Length: 488
Image: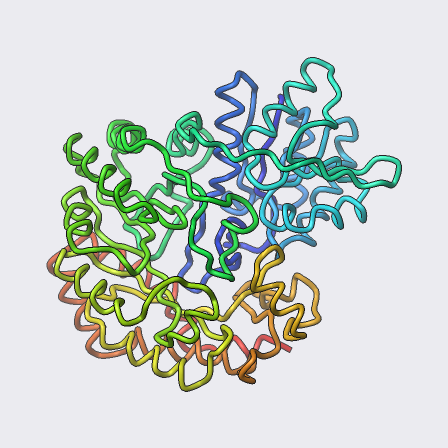
């Protein structure tokens, strides 16, 4: 075998490739999408590859190591995240000991952000493929196949004779149509029913139609550490993947377009909608959208099958939004919400606690606003997580707000989101943020009006009923717990 791509063992239900890696209270488990795309591209180039998700398939540490040893690949590509990095390194070490002649390659957000330190401290890591690594892995495989020196490859970090070499970054892929369909890769290597997103109908497929984002949100992980500027697949290529899913995966009830910002280029989003309409698309879909979308675009998206949009509102405080460089005017947000409601599109609303400028007053005002919006289908309330490689991390480090703790402690023992800062610039503590998120979640989901709405929705839309029941049984036990009680 040429390459084994593996989402290694860690906590049950942990999502490494989430924008905020953790075990979610909703039971959401992300596809290992970036490993999958790199695997699919290497296969397209003629290499024999395998993609394994130890977490989704519940493969133990020892069995995962044995699986890698039996595959005996030229390279083993291991995904990383900040909370799981200690476990990722432990797994990588065990793999290297079992396969001393194979190259062990780390990829992902944490490896990209802390490449120098990782290779300096861990001799069993042969190299790190930083940022967007699809082409890097293929070039590495070509070098190994032809017996060429790989140390000059762009976008890698490695150690030689106790010196760290940080090769120049690889340019981003401009033509994303060269990457195979994510759905096709999943269907070949993974069990689709293993993956669940609480706000999306089950079973579902998560695809990416673009990479990167032109917004400057200080906390946002993937644009800053992996993918940079916004680039999109062609509308026809995207519509063709929907068609492939319809023809080959008839059990799939919905497609999640999990781009950081599907609507970053509004004209492109409209063109995608037009292509889907042209194909007579019947698949429902959900996407990530910024809170500045106009009514006409929303109507077109709804006609093309868009059922729900995921939007990061974060706060109702303009000061907070400005502090995190959100690039959104709160005065326009109500129009956006109303436009989505008129267009018949539901909203999964995302809020944060602990950003610069946040106080208990701003948090409570945000919650009150969230409770008044009748088309917020679901909502999430997260404490601020600052990850290496982001502007938010630099802010927390420079101001002394960053907690002095091991990376494993960035999540609780059971894997829930912990808080990575002691307090913010307004003195809001991590305990207050964690407790607020628990309180807000309970307040949002246990309202009689919300429960009544969901019952009526389930009667009118049986598929929504199935999704809601599955989601409720995932989240209900967390509605009566305090995350801060898990934190020492």
